[in-house]
Amino acid sequence: MASDHRSLYRAHRPQTFADVVGQRHITETLSHAVAADRAHHAYLFTGPRGTGKTSTARILAKALNCADGPTATPCGVCQPCADIAQGAHVDVVEIDAASHGGVDDVRDLRDRVALAPAQARTKVYIVDECHMLSTAGWNAFLRTVEEPPGHVLFVFATTEPHKVLDTITSRTQRFDFRRVNTATLAAHVDEIAAVESLTLDPVARDLVVRAGDGSVRDTLSVLDQVRAFVGDDIGGEAVAEVLGTVGADELAELAEGIAAGDVAGLCALVGRLADAGVDLRQLAGDAVEHLRRLLLLRAAPDTDLLELGADTTAQLRRQASGMATAELLRATELLAEAQAAMRRGNIRLPLEIALIKAAQPESAGDPGALAARVERLERGEADAGRRVAGDTA
Ligand SMILES: [Zn+2]
Image (tube, rainbow, N blue to C red; front, side, top):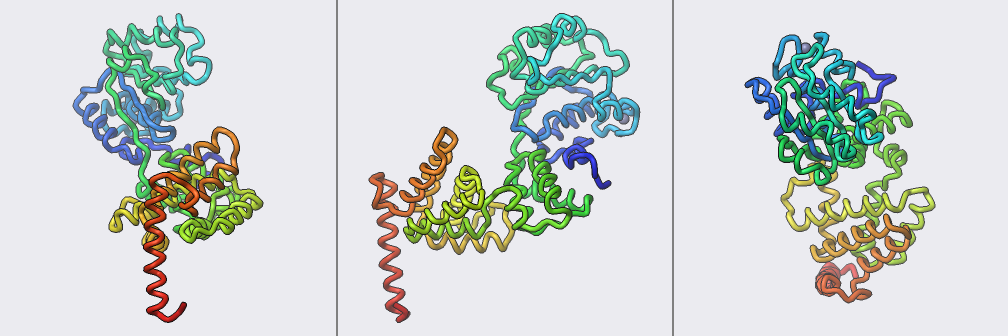
């Protein structure tokens, strides 16, 4: 099933509850509810973009309306299933509240909402980005949500649940979709790569997954983008170039520069990457993630929280061994602050200041700096001792 014209996300959009990636806590509950004929009349799906909210809502609509159903495993080929998958079923209404409040004709909608379905067993309203519904838009649904007629089901989906009216929240069953963890996303990328005859080396896959940031849709968009540039044989360097991400070597250089207190080297590195067209905000983000990984490895050496390959973990462990926990903690905090400051305005300065403070604890007066200096002094003496003992000084 090569997908020359459709995006990978659309081509591989989940069609059954079992296909939904990384949200088993939700899909299993919904499966059981459908199988027991106990689906709620209104759901609130919350969570980051691209984590499967709308796909799951469509699958729920199929489960309720499949010719073989209601069933937790809709067939996918009957007329109702096919129409719903195409977004063309007359009784499965998708409303995107992000565009003009979502509702063109509120009165018409209000009149239609409670009506019996034309063809389906259960009429399903899927309201995307529902926090952007206008007040009039909400009012069109409210009455029916409060007094459900039995043949209508609502799925309100949102990335910002705190903006949803209490009257809606209190009458819906809420499911929180999560960012998908790295290992699950990596496995998903592998599956799709196999189907699409793509080859990715482990570094490439790690970069793609990292750029996707827990979103299945974003991860596959990144993969689309990379494939468009480099073809079906995808290496780590090419991915770094396409994404403007910083390579593993540069991140190691940055960590080593901080550990060595090499301000000149760090500023030169920033200059070099800026000249190469790297987005410095991206650099700050990558540096924060890199230092966070070192910090975790340093603070909890046996951790498998990172979900990385053995080679990558071994490299990171080597870098982490050169820095003390207090230093790493402080550097991570400084870079994260810089990242926030870079969003607000000046781009290069906050990054450089953070790197200088991280590399030279003596230049700053905070308690973290003191701890970092002490650890560095102790390490320096230990190093000096080793050098004398090894007669390599
Ligand atoms: Zn069906």
